[in-house]
Structure formats: structure tokens, C-alpha cells
Length: 90
Image (cartoon, rainbow, N blue to C red; front, side, top):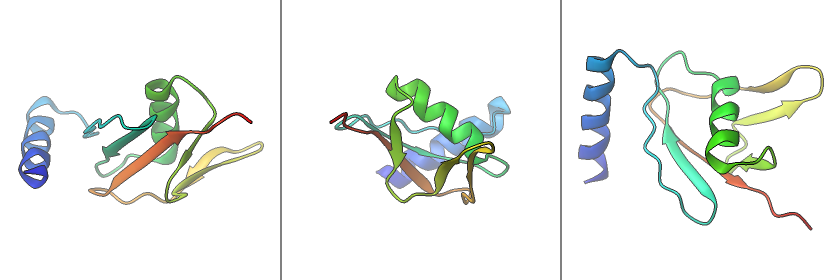
């Protein structure tokens, strides 16, 4: 079923001309989404911050990280699902 949903979202994206396919699955303050070709870490980090409502978050697979003076960097692959989660303040 998830595959079918992803295919439908991909087709809708092509029709609408959008670049990103965001399959939002909020769970335990996490968001999972799939990106398309040309989407980079800057977009991914902005998306996570907006969806989670905080700048204190992390990617579960460390695909994107913040580097002082550079910003959000990494090497994401199109068609792959990524998850970001809000971090706990201690």
C-alpha cells in the first residue's frame, strides 16, 4: 500500500510540476518524507524545521547536518525516504 501511495504522489507531483514528494507521517514528533531529484539538504532542513515547529531536530540517518558558517549540508538521494525528529531538551 505504501508503494502504491508513493506512486500516486509521484504522478501527482509530475502533473503539478512540483519537485518534492512529501509523504508526511507524524509520529513521536517525527516527519517522514520522500524527495525527488534536485532537492538538497537546505530544503530538507527548512522543511523539517517548519513541520516540527523547531530548529532543534535531527535526521535519523544523519543525511543532513548543520555546519557553522555553511548551513545545512549533506548528500541526499532522490526517491529515498528520510525522517527528521525533534530533539528532546534536557
